[in-house]
Image (cartoon, rainbow, N blue to C red; front, side):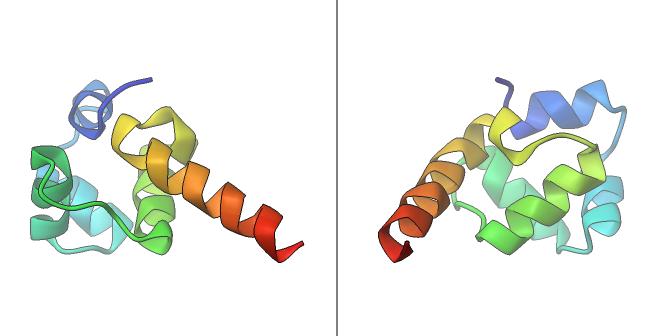
Length: 76
């Protein structure tokens, strides 16, 4: 599992390029990478799709993925 910053760098993307590809604010990427905020599930999916990875492969997204799975189990 890698951090968002590591994944972004492996794809040779700047913060601005990733933000544009994911259709999110540049500040969103900056805040997630700095640990100041956790992404909403929809934002997490857009960022992961822009990077071409599964959301669960990104460290900062792991807790959000786990929470979504647990919520799904509770709803079933």
